[in-house]
Image (cartoon, rainbow, N blue to C red):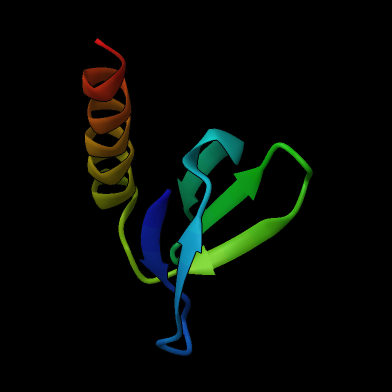
Length: 63
């Protein structure tokens, strides 16, 4: 799970496994595997880093 910010400054937590694509057009849009689109304040690079840290956390607990 990663914490993100909607364009109206509301914080929310997203299951990173549901992310299909992240685009900047110019706002950052996350498209989920369900087809839902979410607009957020974070850049696609910030989201990538959050997902990488989340996955490292998960896999380190498994090992």
